[in-house]
Image 1 (cartoon, rainbow, N blue to C red):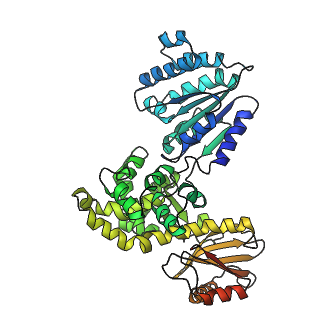
Image 2: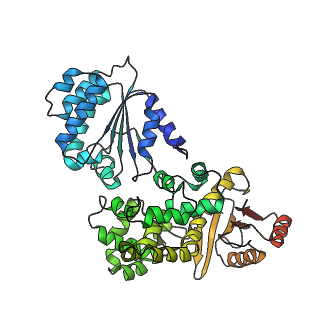
Image 3: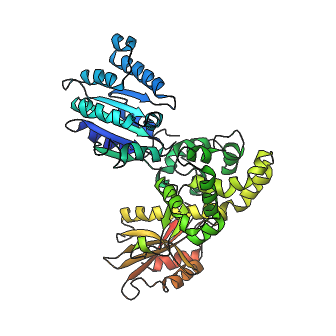
Length: 467
């Protein structure tokens, strides 16, 4: 598997900061396992760099460790043996050694939030060091963190002493499906989507699934086995981010089980709807949830049709299939859980992830010119019992593309196109003025009849993921 995939934009941003006049202050943040440290390692491999990984130890132990790393970097026996009780003393020595005439120095403090957690005054201490010493030296500073809530509080929020100092901010997300094949070359799209439905775009998770012959053996080894790397991963991800993990687990489980509207979540969660807001906002801020509205909504923030869904494929899978079956897994009855997953995996999980993949593909078709116009919005549409998986809209051109995604074993036939056309006729958005086109996505190809229809029409696009 390739160790480094699809971080070109982030690398370019770091290189721009490295080349800028004056000092640079870059904040890199994102959830665990997403590849932040690998990105930084790639960036500094040919540069003069001091890298320090903060730990959850008390402040004094971090200070002593940082002193040792700085002494080795500066090759300073004096700093190595000195009795240092203040961070400023170390930063002063570093600043003195970073002359404008020398190669630029990159200072990386990884997991920065642990320093602020050990000492709430640390952001203020670091702010003084930056303002009085580091920003005047030939330095590029990178603060990196994986606890998103703490990084926001300590570095990014307006209340932080460090607010306004940064010259760049890089929020790292997961690898999109379009680059997934680079991790797992030689596999069919069907196989890739099945794996992606569990691992999402988290490089560490993808690596764990690389060598297994099929997705279910990978799930059994890494997720269902009590010693597996991902068995308790959601608890590990959330316990440092939220004060009451159990409450948030119950909320996420309700959404994973099919409760998407606020009243449904309130009912299944067992909490008044008026009290839901703070929990939902926290999970949205942590990039766990998203609020989705029909793509045709004129004012999304005020739409009453908003649904909440889990953004992370792995968390959706775990809360859908693992958490409800922990009693079985803890008592060693793994086979029963494996059967349940096999029975519901495709229709209950993968098919929905494939819809997300297809919406991403629509942007790619736009970039390649195959779509024929440039949509301003891509999303999903629903009203009553009608739902359309993929929609791209251009208000300026009054054009729309409407699509269905089928993760079936059999080829998709003309009946799917006819059903889609019927639903589209009921969509009120610009009904009398718009120009419609249709896109069908399938992992098992299309029938000859549908191919003939598409060949005779210029408003039907078939995307065959069986090839």
